[in-house]
Amino acid sequence: MLKLDSKDTRLFLIVIAMTLLAPFILNPFPEGSNLAQFNAGYPDLMQRFVIFGIFAIGFNLLFGLTGYLSFGHAAFLGVGSYASIWMMKLLTVNVIPAMFASVIVSGLFALVVGYVCLRRSGIYFSILTLAFAQMSFALAYSVLTPLTGGETGLQLKAADPRILDFGAAEGSIGRASFFGIDMRASMELPVGSWLFTLNFGYYLAAFVMLIAFYVSIRIFRSPFGMMLRAVKSNQNRLNYTGVSTKPYTLAVFVISGMYAGLAGGLLVAMDTQVGPERMFWTASGEVVLMTILGGAGTLIGPVLGAGFIKYMENIVSKINSKTLEAWFGFLPDGLEDALITIVYPFVGKGWHLTLGIMFMLVVIFLPGGLVEGGKRIGGWLTGKGRKSKTDGGQEATASTPAE
Image (tube, rainbow, N blue to C red; front, top):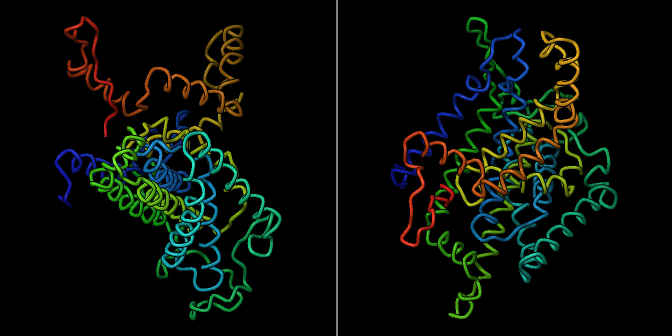
């Protein structure tokens, strides 16, 4: 199917099913229940799941396949966002031209950045990418204010020319659309005590994510992907054999930047406002966390990592002291206060602390991320994860991350 082997086809079908059913899977608790606050099936959050999934998939092509760790990938996210918003301001609010513009402009920018940064490897490459990202942020924040809007950013305005929107009402601000269909268009589906929201913008972003995921599978299984793995395994050996690795690393750097630009364009399609904060170094660090947490070098890992972090950022961060009081209210006063005191630093504004602890545990005990954890659990359940003795008497377990 689609030139994929049976294993990859099965994985792709699972991802398709999870994506299509996400509004139902992410709303497991009925409306009005105490646990309804853990539901994540509302449009804005689901869109972020798939958009940052695209961002992480692209980053994983660079880091997971070649081992080149970029600390400045948010620069391409920001450049793609600015290209997209300008396309909407000047030509049309249709998201298709905006997405194409974001991919092309971010790809060209990645070509320039990659040509310079890939002259070095290791930590020097990482610092160079970080420097480019911070320079890009500084330019967007203050120097290029006429193009970027500076600190306040850019958004659609009634005075924008939008020369291709002939039928638009005069003086209207306009909303991002797909050939006339509002990206915010939604349909609510009540089922008993549950309320599911089917949002057009989410499904468009999900469709783009599925295409991006399929392309990443093809890259992983291609001769090009095998060469990138060889670069990660031993780049010096390739150089000694006369193989130039620069074209391969530059190509995957540009592809990775285009993925980031596409994610930036989709962010604008969902929320037509762009600010320089998308290019800040913390945004670059976030995609690194997503990829490593989910499983660097795996296919589905970055998507899982992106969903996990965005869930914590939007759901766990909303838990406050009143929520904890409702949870532990049935306990004696002393025990209730003690539990609230213990739990409170790890939720609400302290969700970063929980994320940091989980990240350390994953790096120490699950180098393959959530994907490796899933494989281990599956192995234990099926009996295939039992440790076996090698000829030398050492315990051997399957530790290679799944793809």
